[in-house]
Structure formats: C-alpha cells, structure tokens
Length: 290
Image (cartoon, rainbow, N blue to C red):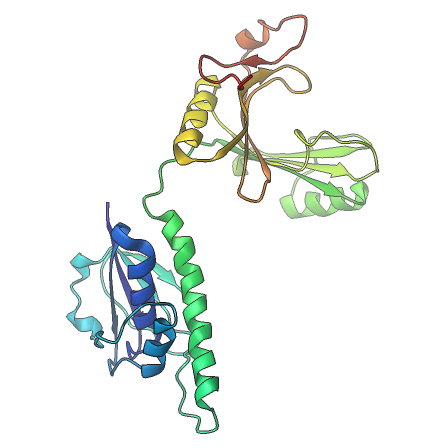
C-alpha cells in the first residue's frame, strides 16, 4: 500500500520543501509526498540550489498552507521544526517529529557559502532520516517473538551483576564464576552477562541477540520469512541438544551481529533426544548446502 506523506515546517520554504523533494526521489512508488506550512512564504533559493546539487529539481515547487490539506489524504505527518512551534494537521494519522534546525537566517554576517553549507547540512540530515524511512515502508511481518534474549561481555562479573540487578530490579536467576542470567517474564526478557576472562568463548552462544518464538513451527516459519525478506541465514533451522536444547535459527544483521531465533523444546520433544547429540535440521529445504 502506498504511503501518503506530508512534511511540515512553518514557512514551507526550506526544510519541508527539501523533504518533499528528497522523499519523492528516494521513496519512488512507495509513497505519495507533499509539504505545507503554517505560515507559507516562498521556496528558498538556497534550498533549490542545495537540492540541485543532488540532481533533484524543486524549482517548480510552491509554498502551501497546512489548512488547505485534507487530513483524509494523509497517512504520515513529518514535522521538521526545531525551535519553532510546528504546524498541526488534525486527525488520526501516524506522526514523526524530526527536529531539524532552520537553515535560513536573516543574519547579515553570514556569507553565501555559509548559508549554502547550512542548507546542505539540513538536506543531508533529512536525507539520512528518509533513508531509514525507506526501509520501513512496505515492511513484511517478522517472526512473532514472545521473548527477547541478549548476551553481553563484561569485565567485572560481580560489579555488572550488581548493576543489572539494580537496573532490572531482580536478582539473577542463576550465576556461576563465568556468567549470570537474568529473567524478567513481565518484560519477556532473558539477559546474560558473560565474564571476559580470556578463555575461549563460543561465538554462537555468546554476545548475540535472540528472539524467542512459540514452538518449532514458528522457528521454521521465521526461516521462510527471513528468506523472503532477504536476511542472511547463518545457520538454517535445526534442533540442538548441547547446552540448552533448542529449536534454533541463526541470522546475521547487516553489521554481522548474530541473531538467534529460538524455541524451547517441549517435554515430548526432549524425550526424542538421540545418543549422539548431533543437531537435527528441521524439515526439507532447511538443510545447509553441501
């Protein structure tokens, strides 16, 4: 579904105009974009010049009043005011606030180059935010998580355990000389501290993030969702027996951080454990390539 996006600032002369031009260029058919202001004036020539440097022509844009915008034609409102009072579009729409300093100025001491630099800064800040937004539009559904797991390395296990016991308002469920595990069912949180003691640590089970799901079928479903999404599959779904028995799928995020999607085994599934403790891949199409 195409998102209808309205960017707002006071004069609809610089920030919201650049946002309109950038969004139209960067979002393409995923969005219909427009802009307006509470006190419209004219499109600032420095904004036109800054956008032209990126190959985007907004010279034909005109400033518009927010009162002329029908809220029924908007899905998402982005306000760009920093120091000023932002315009308001009534109605039940999604809202984002991106406080961008106004690059326009009446200060006579500013040179053309200095004003141009201010507009480039605002342009680039808006573009970076739109780049994030572009990845969120038309986003497919992810796995239905029921728990969040994180593991981090700490230099002083005792000091860190005390800190996180205070922060999470609970004692760890268990601890050894090498780790402490915190459980907060009300937060769906499973959080592990692992001491950095110079010993070899298994990267598959430490220093990662994890999403717990309901059962084996949910792990397999997450695998197919990951493939459709284009996520990198580090290890396809399998049942592992060593350590905590789990159905698990390993992904990596764009920076290479390991993500485990896992489900705990039922009593009936635990009873099927084989003597060799070797992992079992979960169904046709999930085995790794030979």
